[in-house]
Length: 443
Image (cartoon, rainbow, N blue to C red):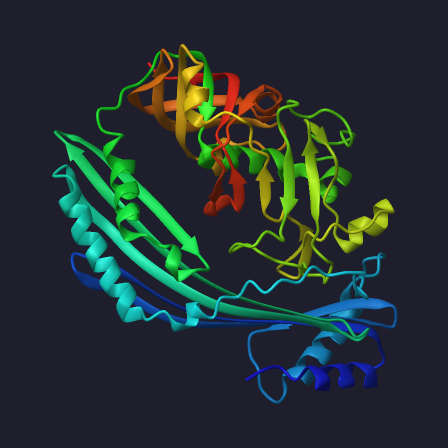
């Protein structure tokens, strides 16, 4: 059952609303996990959410619900009227009339709907058997799982704007333990795509297995400053942390280290970062939660900060155009980065490693929430990776800590690799990045 948009807008008009909008999202997902040859969990879930906003008597109100029935439209209108009476905020909320142009693309792959769960279960059972057979040091397959999700979003308002998007993705994931004597290390991988033909089970098995096995025999390095190569995953984690304070609201509240830094050097000239939510992958989006068109834009160009992120409200305050980064979180709209891309360099990761006599290659970071100070940029994170000796990866490292200031890290980018990878956890396409020096604490 869908919400009756026409009825909602008719009621809004009849109740004296000057403007109103309605956002509807619907998703259906199926997921399961496997343990020791049996289905460990199985879930089918339907998610519906409706967010409505309106301006009445010069005041802005909002309402939301997860229930759709014949009374939903009336409920939303009455709730908006009630919240509008309670809000004392001077700035009036904005119902957006629409962008001049939207870059709509058909990224939905209908074959996602046709993926049979029975086939996915067989694939996961096969993956589990192959992981146990891959190496006798693999002591446990902790979990293997699958999820497929199909969703749709509609945003409409009283100005005649109507935007629609449909998406479909599937995900495989696995976690294992490897043991050698008393040492135990874990391996974990996630694969997500919009194309069922992209998944290669044998390649996935190898990646999961090697992620654990290569950590066996790990040691601690000597504590000092080293040249550091961040692999795509860890580079993307630190990059997202670095860019979090470019939300103009944080700048306005003076809680951002990017205050007054627009069009100034904030990173090495080697670093170029582009925001492009229009890239045709699982993170594609052509409009934000406020209905603003998403565009491709420079975030950092040759180390220079080119833009802050603006919602409709903060853009109005700053006297600029909104950037299409509005995200509705608990009834409040904040600005968040869409997917970002680090422009790759010319050297392969192997060539970056080859240029280091003694250094550290980091492929794991832990404790991001507790170990990162967003105000100062200081961080201290438990890490793992490999030593680099004479231009080659050497012994694995664990129980080491990398500590620095995030501004220093990206100002000291020495080179960027050409091994770009879409990192699912950060919605970032990023290659390995070479940092001149970072403080590593070991033994």
